[in-house]
Length: 434
View 1: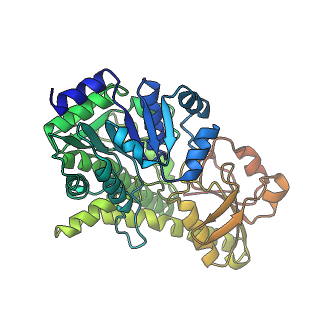
View 2 (view 1 turned 90 degrees about the vertical axis):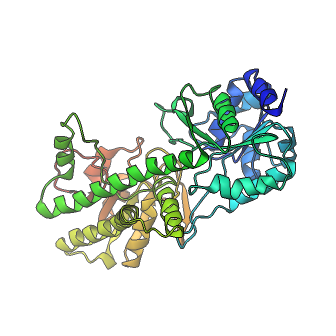
View 3 (view 1 turned 30 degrees about the vertical axis):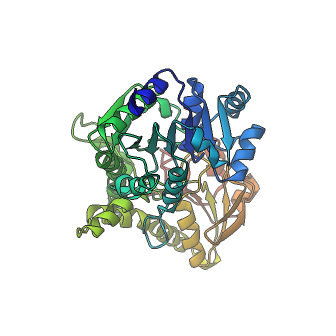
C-alpha cells in the first residue's frame, strides 16, 4: 500500500498517533477530544508551566476538565511534553499555535513559521499535517508548504498538508468542539480526504473544501461577518442614544421579523482573537494584492472607538452631577473579554481603563476570574466587591457580565452604574445604558 492508504487505514483503526502543537484554548480541547476517542495523543507546547500543570492535574483552560486530562495521562492516551522528538512518532500533526497581531496591525505568523520549521526537520513519510491557527489566505500554501518542502518529501505523495479552521467558542457548553461542524481544505485532494477521515472520528459533520484557500477564507468570512454586524449595532446604539431611544428595545422589535434579520448586540467593544485580529489578517492580505478593504477597516475602527465613546459618556454623566472626571473614582466590573472566560486577549475593558486613566480618573477593578491585572501598562490588584466599597465609587462600569456577580447588590449600593451589557432590563435612576 502507498503512504495515503497506509495512513488512512491507521486513522480508521485509531492506530495513528496524533501530535497537537500548542495547548491553548484551541489545542488542548482538541487533544483531549481525540484521546477520549481512543487515539494516542502527544500535546506539544513550549510553555513549561502548561506542561507541569497538566501533569499535576491543575486546570488552566475553562472548557477542559482537569480530572479527565489526568485520567487520560494516567491511562497513557495523552502525553503533554516540551520534547519535539514526539513529532517523529506522530502520524498526524495539528498546528494550533497563536497568530497574534503586531502593534502596527501586521499579522504575526512567527509561531506558525517556527512550528513549520520544526516539523520539516522531523517529518516522516505517511504523515498528515493540519494547520488550524487562523491566518491570512495562502498561509498554508505560501508559508507552511515551502517549509515542509525542505524535508525533501513531496506533498500528496509522501506527506499530506491541509488547513482546517478552528471554531472554538470558549465557555460555550452548548457547542463544544465535538459538536461544531468542521471545514477542511487540502493542498491536494488526498490531504483533504485524510483530514476528513481524521476529524470524523470526533466530529460528525465535515465539509471538504476544494482548496486550503477556501477553508482559510471561510474562517475569515465567519469572523468578519460578526465584526461588521457588531460594529453596526454599536453605531446604532450611538444614534439611538442621541435620539433618546433604547437600542435594546429597537433590536427586540427588529427580531420579530422571521426572515432577513439576525440580531447582533452592542457592547463595550470586541475582544479575544477572532474578532479584533482575524479580519485584519484579510485586510492586510488584500492590501498586499492592491485592494483596500473598506467595510472591514470601518468595522474595526467603530468597535475600537466604543471604549472612548463609553468614557465620554461617563465623563458627561459625572459632570451632570458636578464631579470632574479628574477627581472621580471609578470601578470597572469585569475585565475579561468574554463572560465567564478567564481570557484578557484584546479585552475592551483594558482600553476603557487606559482611556479613563488618560483622563486622570482613579480607576480600580473587580473580576471574579482575575485576581491581578498586569498587562499593557496596567498594574492593579482587584478590590473587594462589597457594599461599603461600592459606595465609595462615583461610577461603576459593568463591562463583562459574569454569571457569578450579584447585580442587585451592585445596583443597590452604587451611585451611578454605566451598564454596557444591558444587564438591568428595567429603568433605574442610577443606571446609564449604551
